[in-house]
Image 1: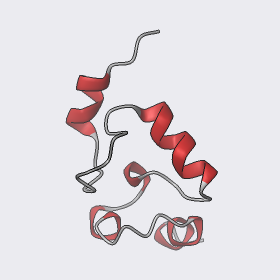
Image 2 (image 1 turned 135 degrees about the vertical axis):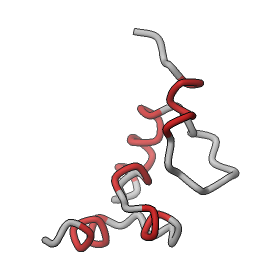
Image 3 (image 1 turned 45 degrees about the vertical axis):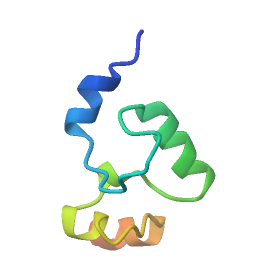
Length: 64
């Protein structure tokens, strides 16, 4: 299956502008997983803007 990078970019919620992985979801997920983090698309907008991608913050957002 071919990457739908341009289509993915239209729905990407990441506000980190210099990100080279925007629209390339598999690379984004792999990058954040390698760093013990979650991608921006899993966070509410007000939390995403803090750039705290920790799994602990993700759990707190979802009441766990």
